Image 1 (cartoon, rainbow, N blue to C red):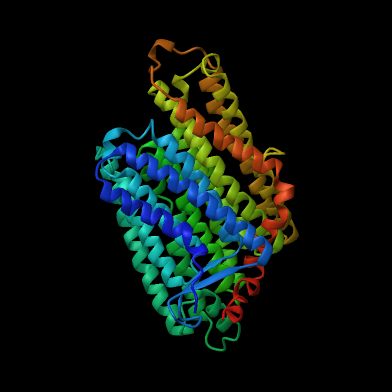
Image 2 (image 1 turned 90 degrees about the vertical axis):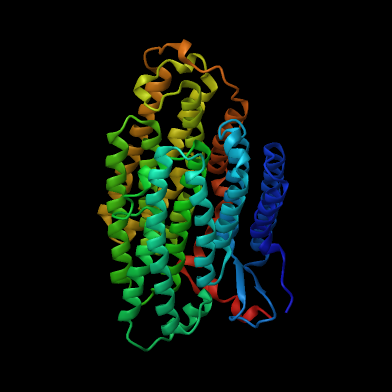
Length: 497
């Protein structure tokens, strides 16, 4: 059986780039070049995959000379392909952003190595067709994230890093436990094969309802779902801004993807329990995120709590598990990855330039940084879902789905959260850029061209995504189908020769 190397490239490129950087020693300039080139190569391979999947359907490959479903599988459907491309774009601009923001000391101690290893794990989690290997890839990116969150050794990093490591170790142990029970029921670890076997399952389905709770505990912990989000605001606040960009844009989204994939494939016979449970937690997450976003003047904390709001909105669409709901969830998922990266970068620039995290201590910056100010304004509108920016399309489909399924409270709460998001982020814009002039002599005379280039580029990507949403609709329709119609995901198995 021949292994197709193309689906493996988004995993292999960053992995081998990290190994090469390890062998080059503590040479930051070399690491920068390798990380940049690797990010570009991942983008090229991801674009190639998107085109091929759009033309030919799901691409699957199995490692080793094992017939499916026993081989280690990598499965690229449109959902995985779009997530890989979005991750690659964010990685490239975060690497460029890091040149002026992470600091030479952290660069010397293999910062870019850990970034590449983390991206390898994230891409693997999006690509794998095997639930055990999803656990493996989770551990790969978590191990790298443990280093990134503590790299630099400041007091707050070590304090929050310990909490972050402890929480993820506990959830990983439950992940292994859930895998063992799932294997005892189905006799398989291939996700498509598990779905096929559960369609004809005649045993006691209560075990699957119990597994739904355990899997949700595991993935909700990593995604920051209520009530398991308690670790996220502090842990995400601690590391330097480039690390926060990657964490905020990518890591919670891996947890969301894992919930959507497992709940669409495995837990299909008791949706009144499993998906209603998911919906209630999603709504609680929106409420708690909204409270947090309105409670702070600290720019980093406001955007961090907006992560929770987005997690809840996406999971409302996932809980609907119909075409409109999943289409909206996937639109909003991709949108939120891009716009959160952009906003964290812009906030990072403001902090880097002023030395302040509290927006109320800033003011009048529109006179010095007009382009940055208006880019922040556009990003705020995009985050809130103002048309024709991309957040609008995701929320539109999600709200349509909730109303169609008679979940009016959920739909109204999603709409209200848009106002909360807009108000919380516009507060930063008004305070920092239009408030009473701050003492401009306090501004740090620092080089920031790469910071602004990466930040503005991410805003432009977000705007382009919104303007091209209609043209991209067929791709997002394909991506959503593998969730609301899981047979379209699992039917690759008979086609593998």
